[in-house]
Image (cartoon, rainbow, N blue to C red; front, side, top):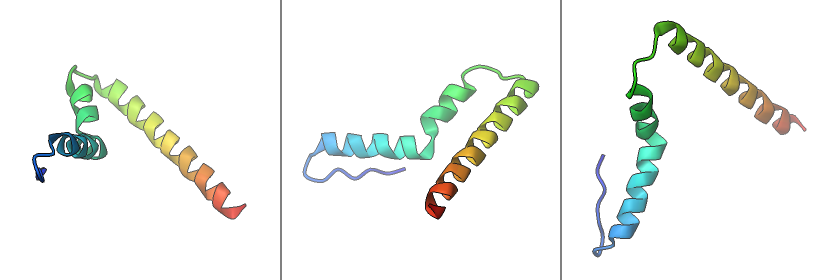
Length: 66
C-alpha cells in the first residue's frame, strides 16, 4: 500500500491512508487475530456473518424491485 503526499499535505494523505486501511479491512483483521479463536467459535461467527450478508443482499434486492 502506497500513499503519495502532494504539496506537503500530510492531513490529506493521512485521511487517504485511513480510508484505504478501512476499505481493505486491515484493522478488522488485526483485532480478530489479537486473541485465539476456537474453531467452533470461528465457524459460528462465519455463519452469522454469512447470514447477515444474505439478509442485506435480499433487502437491497427487494428495494430494486419496488
